[in-house]
Amino acid sequence: MKCTRCKQKAVVALPSHNAGFCPSCYLEYFKRQVEKAIKAQNMFSFEDKILVAISGGKDSLALTLQLKELGYNVSGLHIDLNIPESSAEVRKTVEDFCTLQSIPLYVLEMKKEGLSIPEVKKRLSRPICSACGQIKRYHFNLFAKEKGFTVLATGHNLDDEVARLFANTLRWDIDYLSDQGPVLKEEQGFVKKVKPLYRLTEFETANYAFLKGINYSYKPCPFSKGASFTFYKKLIASLEQEQPGRKLNFYETFLKQGQKPFKLAASRKNSPLNACSRCGYPTSGEICGVCRIKELLAC
Amino acid sequence: MKVILQPEEKEIILPKIKSVRALLNKLNLYPTQALIIRNGELLTPDEKIYPKDTIIVRQITSRG
Image (cartoon, rainbow over all chains, first blue to last red; front, side, top):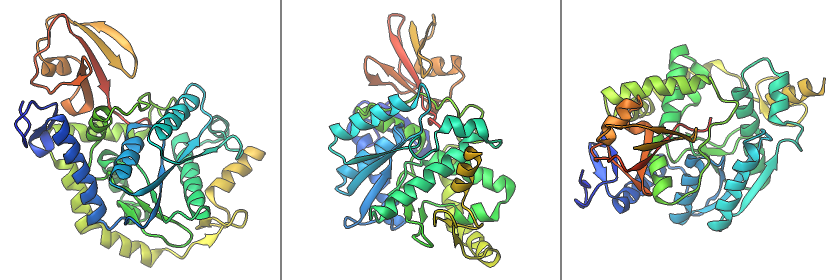
């Protein structure tokens, strides 16, 4: 297979774009997709102070490196979840990466916050992935606000976004559909959140990470087995195999035609958020979700 | 040929596989579900592979 741009030998084939790329043209393609996402969704500027949520997987590390190489002001925040046979290794991967790339890194340890994930898993009756996500979002937001970051960037890719959109659509969940998109504006105690990789698939970020020599953690989280999003991703992969480009089309058409009506419907239905009576975090109830988890662990 | 499956780090021997596409089919994978690596280089599905090769098949699903 030849590179679509320069006719050298291709190393990455992208059926969704009916294209193949050599290493240097692929890196150029990847960079342009990120630039296009940032510009099209007005995500941030070179004046913004950007905090990247770094999990240690290919997506967050690829995002951090690409934003740095584009000249943005980026720092990383890693959350150590205290999961045995996983967290220590992942944390070292993130620390080594940030040292190598001279990227400022902050680390928050959930054990110190009284939220060690294995303990949360033991005590909680609902799936751990949703609680873990809630705890991470809480701390990323709080940290960004406290330290004066203007934007929080995450490595969510097109597969993540499409799996979430698919799940929300299966339930016709107005609240979640109204909130879905590559940009969440700063409001009611939440920092602006952006997903600059939303035009790129997992396969594309994996190729980028490989070609840039990024040492990333590719072992799955030991607690994520059976997660519904993983199942949806498999279904969507079959669809994409039959209809290349369907994922991006599904998501972009939602952004163009579906997002606004759901936002409008949710704004009619929902009341403004309150400050959590324990920690001050924005919540629809009296106590926020993370304080409720802490309360459960304290019993 | 020797095939190393990641993230499991499991080694298997697969004889009579002549292309990346055939290897992916054998492993029940779509071409966009794994990186196929030989001698530190990425391979596209149309590439030929040989009995003396060692091939890494790295599935790309997120950590969760």
